[in-house]
Image 1 (tube, helix red, strand yellow):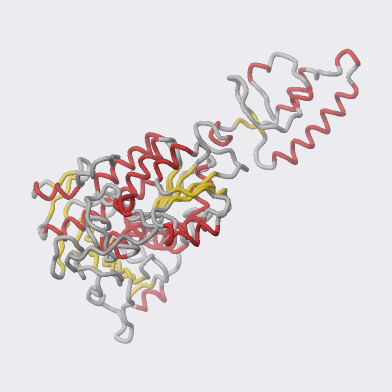
Image 2 (cartoon, rainbow, N blue to C red):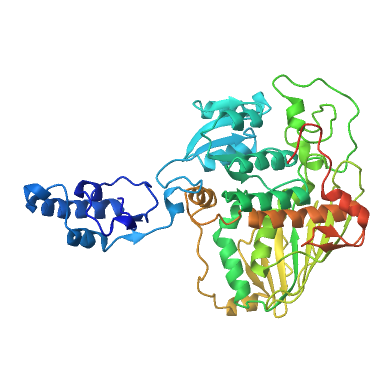
Length: 492
């Protein structure tokens, strides 16, 4: 229904006032009904049409100013983004989504958003992506994401499921073209890339989401509500451990050079990374352990759990980080590592230490934990001044320690808004809703945190971090790991 401020002092066609078409014309103020629009408009239409029938023949195509003001009195002004201006897609319209890297996790991401139109698919490995191509037979197929974005002007949003080292170049191009972006975690392979993408998305006002699905979980809300309720008192330490890696790490670079498999575009797979011959030690999934392509166990899993710790403890940039690990190799992450982060006091919360473990390593058992209870393969422990809390790796099944504390604890009310669902958050954001929970303003800093830990692993020194200025203060050569020189022909 279209009503314009400039018409308030004029007469307007009753047919126009009864129109249910929603759109923008001129520079007037758009006014439409709140939720329930269609039913309410039908009632308004009936009332006005009946009044119109009583108007004499000379005035049959117009309504009086009084009739107009009566009809308009209950209308509500809504912001333009709800109706799809400023690059957003109007509600009720389906997004045209393109997938890049659709043979692995990208396939699952597309399933999460398949309520929309999947119009284009891009992958450098035809065999690996074949099942996804069959699932969406109407989608156009591409090998080079750049050609896809340049040719297909109808794409509204891009879902990225490629290896870590290509996230930034794909997302950067999409953002510059005004496309909304959903990207696998970690957001990027380097801290510089993460900072640049975060700033670019904010400037372009596109809608983003990083693939930390549990950020939308009920477990995360409960964890925050318990911590903020003072269930264990001020938190001084957090220990979190993962059962990664489940791919080879702590190995040397292979020396043989087998032929590239049919259907794999190895040059495109490498993207901005330094050139090296193809080897099955890298693809399809084993790239995670190689520094040129992946970010190791910490990069793979850190964002999943740091999202909950950061929200519950309101973390910002760490001030320092140091690490230890099993034997280091030049090109691969170690088989196991421990990373220590130090965070300063925030708001009403004291300084806190966060310790990460992987490769089968675990923290010491918290005081008060029953002798018969074992620490699971993955999990988190929050150490508070009054008690400790043990929970799953992404915050599920929280339990106060000792058990007597758990029995005495009265659960706080649910005060945080609950999520409509991880993928739906992003879809609704693209259509004019509120920002998704793990958008790049959240996902970027989480990625920086994990990648800083990787630099500490590689340097084997304590690093003092100036997060605001993106600089390691005490070990200048460590700053070389903040980014790297792209291969010729590639840029952010």
